[in-house]
Length: 399
Picture 1 (tube, rainbow, N blue to C red):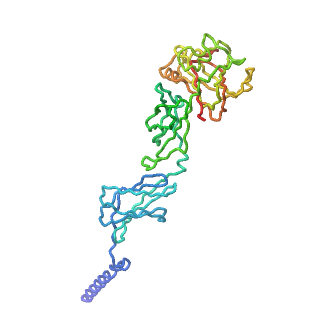
Picture 2 (cartoon, one colour):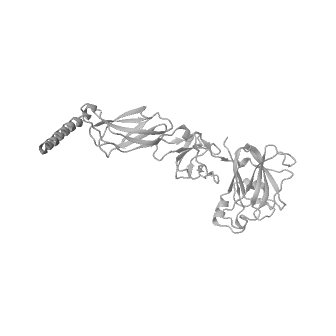
Picture 3 (tube, rainbow, N blue to C red):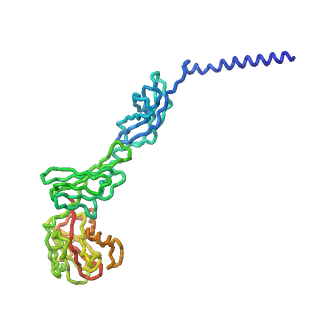
């Protein structure tokens, strides 16, 4: 029995070895008796977005057997083959895939060798491609409402802009020079103004902004259309409009001094009267107004005395001869703002600088084009029922 037991154990070991040898080779039937080879993987795969296209890039595998890369997207429905031009991992391979839709894609990069062996591949996910939908959301960079532009003594004009949006890269400004030629200036993201030389006074100024949807974008997007920089109404056409109910002038400060292009005294000063009271002017031409500036009387009168605190602006194209408001339309009610909010008689340097630049008031879009202006004074900074100011500017659309 002892000998039989040893014999049985020996036979079992033989059968086990034979069985293992048989099954260990079975996988070869599925691989057609070939060894499976996986080419090396690429590294640092990523993308740069664009306008209905994308740029994919990666560091190539050092595997010298790799001859090409296959790029697939849309769940493998679309593909592109790229030849392997380098095997140095320090290099960067780049390829642009055009003709895409505005969508978020996933791409797969697979390496192949000359025998057709393929790598496992890497995916580049959440690849956003931009197009017309994104472009339709873009707005031109805002010009400065407080000070849209400055006419310089050398015949140039400086156009001022508000702070740029984070994705804005530049703004192109078009204008006409004194030779009748259309010229361009450019405002970079970090700049807030551009000076245009040899500007033809009163001519159209338009601007268009450009954006990058992502910092690494290979394409910039322009706003669909140019916008206009509002121009100062031609004050040489202005004249007083003296209607029966209008308040007069006092102390030699006449109404026409409001548009004499001087910030020195005298300006316009009314006699004392109970609130409300009003005065009118003829701009000489109909205009679609975008806003206006009032320059206060400075010194001890700043945010004091007869400088307007609350007032209304009215417009008309055919004022009634009796001085009534029947033929006028109210454009808006406005309140002067003191930056420091300090009490009357206590002004900071910020208050002084703000007033010296002229206080800007916007006219809402949709206001009718008018030729005649009436300003109705409701209150002054001191509460005294008289009004004074040094200068008045009106800005208009260029159309």
